Each structure stands twice: as structure tokens, then as C-alpha cells.
Length: 242
Length: 196
Figure 1: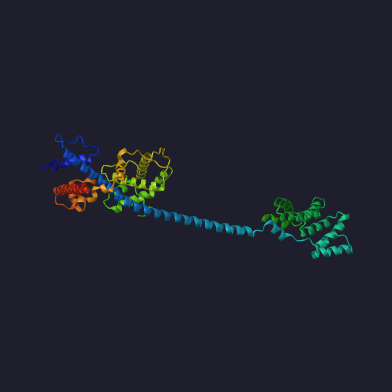
Figure 2: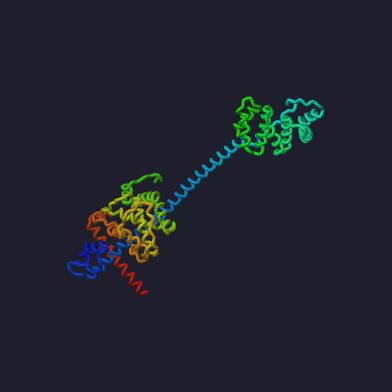
């Protein structure tokens, strides 16, 4: 029986023991060079099997990695799709809500919707002359420039709140807002309670036109609280929209 | 394998120890889905690139595969923690080799201490020139028998059963003759190479 066969098991034991060195390998109390060489050979074989297995596993893991990356990409793209869908829905919601919001009139539009010149014949008037009839017809016909000239003449010598209101309305119509406000504020600050409501109403509309919401709201609040005030209902309506 | 499938340690052990590559791959895919991102984060936050993360994670899985297949191996923590700890160790060694000194941010994941020689074989495998690998000279039953004995570390009785040999002695003889053949082949080759 040759030595390798005799010591086969022992050689394998040494080979499996990764700590065993070539020196110190004893076979029946003797160091055998040829057997130590065989241990090294088998040790190398074990290592090579391990390395080979690493290679094989690496190849398998490479394809698993590819499959995982694809799956992850798909998951991310599905995730992105959901994000995009959510963004789309958000944009739609925003579009519709802003559309609804834009369907509520802005202050300037409110001015246009609610501004209606006070009819001159409706006004209580004691002046009874031809000049006044001309003013009345110019004003009611919308000839505001001519009406302003005539009103200027009247207001040179008097401080008639009614005429100031009409001039304020004419000036608003001609887009001379600050000049209109001077007339309207004068009536608003006066003791004349009858014309004060009209003055406040047109002043409030002038503020809506220039989008000075707080100023407009203050005047409209007074008209909406006083149930007997002129323009009470319309003031409430505008306040609910503001 | 469904993406939402959950495995516990025992399931992973069973899959990794299965002789079927298909089962083992299920476990690998599960570990990819549940641990890869954490390992990737640990590496990319610590001087590494995504490619490094891929290599380290794969090496960690190979170490896990080897250790879990040992019959006496006991998993003392969650499998994810084990994979992460091995990957962390491998990355620390790689940084050390590159002479980069970093303290890994351990807020990412729990980890356990890994014995020093656990991953030695993988580092050895990275260094080895495949042309020197003896296994490439083995074929057929010789390759199978020697692998079962030296790599799988099965007993001769089990090898005989697996190979369909009538007795344990047949397996022993096969192993001896295969070793002899391999040695002879390598000697012949080395003589040939020296003569060239």
C-alpha cells in the first residue's frame, strides 16, 4: 500500500484545516515531504473549488442584479407615473378651482357690474330753470363732459351736495377718480344723511375700481348694517363676494 | 417570486441550503429587495460609488451563501443585519486597502461583529488568476465527486448515494483516482509549459 493511500484521511484532515502549515505535518511521528506536498495540493484544490464557486455565483448574482435593477427601475417609473398623475390631478384641481375663483368677479369687475349713474330726475331738486334742464338731459344722455362743465358752473357759487354727487358720478364716468373722490368725500363727511348714502356708495365703487378693498369694505359695511340705507342690499351683495 | 413575498431567517436558510440554484436565487433576490439599498447607502455615503456597492453586495451574498450552507452555522441576528454586517466589513477592508481611513456612519443599519476570517476566501478569490485554477481541468464525475467532497464536504457515504455508487468504497476509489488523474495532468502540463 503506498503512503498516500495509507495516510489519505490524515492528508485530507490537514488539507481541510486552513491553519495547518507544511512544517509540522507529522505522519506516524515522522515528517514526510511527499505527503506534505500532497496536503498542499489538496489545499489548493479546496481553494480552487471555492474560487470557482465564487465565479459561478458571481455570474448568477450578476443576472439577479440586472433583474433587480430592471424591477427597481420599473417600480421607480411606476412611482413617477403616480407622481405625475398626482401632479396632473393637482394641476386640474388648481385649474378648476382657479376657474371657479376667476368666475367670482374681481373688484374692478364688481365696479363695472354695480356702477349705475343715479338718474337726475330721480333726485330731489328744487332748481327749476332751463340751464338745469339742459344739464339733466346731458347727464341722463351720458354727455358727461358737457354735464361736468355745467355742474362746475353751478358749484362755483353753491355747495349743493346733490350736484356734488352728480359731478362725482360724471367724473367717475370720465375716469377722473381722484377728482370724483373729492366731491364724494365732501358729501360723505357732511351732515346731509340723505345724500351721504349715495356718496358712500359711489365712493366705495371708486375704491373697488382701484382695488382698494379695505377702503371699499369700510364704506360698504356701514351701508350693509343700516337696513334703511340706500344701496343696502347691493352693499351686502358686494361684501359677500369680496 | 412575488415582490411582496416575506421570508424569515428559517425560510432563507432553507432556500440557500437547497441544492437547486433556482431556490437559492429566490433568496438572493429577496435579499436584494430588502437589503441592497441600505448597503448602497452605506457605501455611497462613505467614499464609494454605486459600482462599488454592487460589487461589495454581491461579495457579501457569496459569503452569506457559503456560511449559511455550513451545517453547524447558526444565524444569531436577522438575515438583513447579517448581510449588512458582512458588506460593512468588506467595505472597511476595501477602504483600508486603498489607505482611506473613514468611520462608517452606523446610523444606517444595525450590524454585528463578523469574525475576521469570514470573508477571507472572497478576497483570495479576487486575487487569484483563473488560469491557475485546477478546477478548470476537471470534468464529469471527477469534478462532481471532488466538489462534493472538498467543497460541499459531504461524507463518502452521502457522495456514494448522490452519485449512485453501490458502496462508499466505490466513492473513495473514485476520489483517489480523480486526484491521481488531476495531479498527473498538472504535472504533464507543467512539463509542457517548462519545455516551451
